[in-house]
Image (cartoon, rainbow, N blue to C red; front, side, top):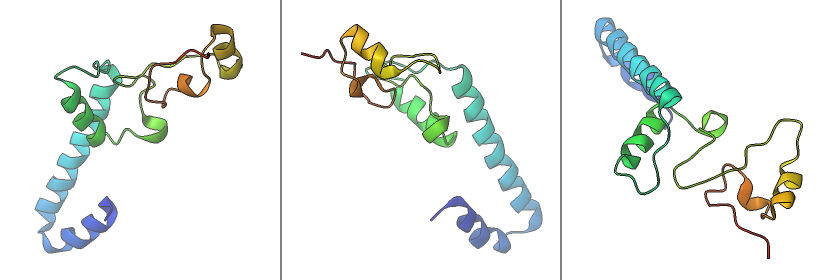
Length: 111
């Protein structure tokens, strides 16, 4: 069930005053989480703050294009838009698939 259908199901049963308050509070929480993620450097994969970071990231709906380039426990090669990640990975002797920001692993060397 997505948020839209949930709201359409529940909100008609609530008085208008409470429905608007609930929507305002949820909107505020999502916007606050997104703002916090904007300035919060992702913690290390071994950090005690990792679960909190993942919760804030989920509340901010940070997924897909909205995800941070740097993720806990992952490294990526950041290249200019006009540059090819494949070429830069080859110059460094790295496996191209492991250099993607969403690979979820440390870039590994090509043997």
